[in-house]
Image 1 (tube, rainbow, N blue to C red):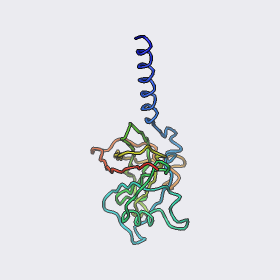
Image 2: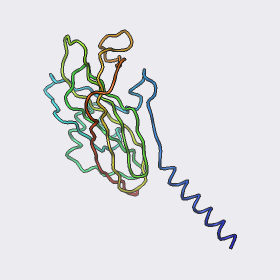
Image 3: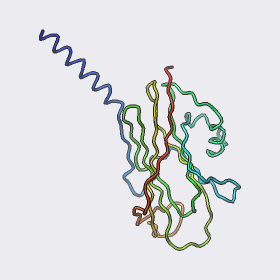
Image 4: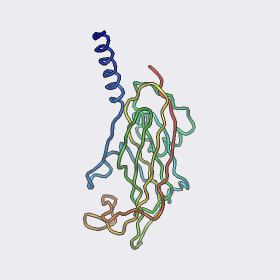
Length: 202
């Protein structure tokens, strides 16, 4: 009887470890490297002839499948017309397109976490509240790599936290390399996008 109990406890411990191994969190805590979790990205200017009224979220195959000279945004245009089929040997990507922004606005991923079959990405979208000079509109395309996943059905949730700011860090200039210095919560609720996808066994 005692041997059976020990065996049962051992099996439960193995199962618990296996489930726990599926959970992970990645965070970007260095304010100077707020794009550290971005696996790929592109800023698409409004004067390019492209415009995006609504934010979009897409489950995507490994970024290595993108033709070398093709911009990320153009690749997304192709992917939305295809059925994405991945196996447990493939890296899974999420690609986020913002709605139309001002070029002084900033977007960065703060945290990515997995809890079983649920993936959550928390991103900040900071709107510029300072003076405008020669500005243009744009939207951003951000890709994050979730890595390989076990076979099964998954749901990904992308939470957009609205912020506002009026000062840039560094030299204080509105350069692409400078991040917000005084960001604070905006007077609106976070929004979210969801996408479901499946991973098959290889």
